[in-house]
Length: 349
Image (tube, rainbow, N blue to C red):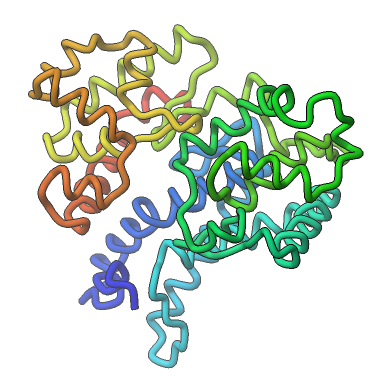
């Protein structure tokens, strides 16, 4: 059984058990589910599972979280046979299956493309599909069992597609190019393994695979950007409002303990893959010098940290010279305090 689950399963009373359950959902399960919704469906919900412009996203998030809660509840049954060795991978599978169900019913053309790609990748000797850290990766056969590109690079792939079209397959009608050639050219261009769902999205964009429009699927409207600040309860509809809300966030962060603040800052990532320093500096909420002063570090140290952000839990633990378990606790406390402190600015009761 995953060590993360033991405090919950071994809690001596219901009050403590509920506290551990809240921590599991807020710190560990929620971020995995939100990432799956963004990557597979283009759905975004905030930390509370809310998107006022996309009821489908809210409903699906709550449905997935309800399944996770039921699974965790069932684990307490003495006759339970489920053995969760890796909680985050288990949650990722639940979320992925729920997203796949939506895609099969609402986006049949994309589902067919994914099936065709999977068949090609598993039957062509030059290609491969493999599992790593709970994700399905694709690439050339010689890349098998290697890690994917960084998250920032994955976001960049779709942004750079015009460059791909102009440098590869120039002058050809891409819809008439064999899928094998398109995939090979894309792998060579990227230079490393790609998450299978990212590959499907990119190929669908390249060859213009479309279904009949479905409300709130792949919602990239202007209204959708109002909820783009990850792991907070902030919502903005203009640059000025976003700037004001970010100032509120920065003020709230400075009121946390040093450990809680640093854990949140180092691991923050918005839906565009930007770290917190980038978000704050681009919005002109804080200057580089004042950022270093507030964090009690030299500008050289800030540059070093910035180059590694956003960090995963292991990197944060290493940076702060502590355990991952302690990182989880600090993040949980930080999110709880930020959620309470920032709620008045969220525009909701």
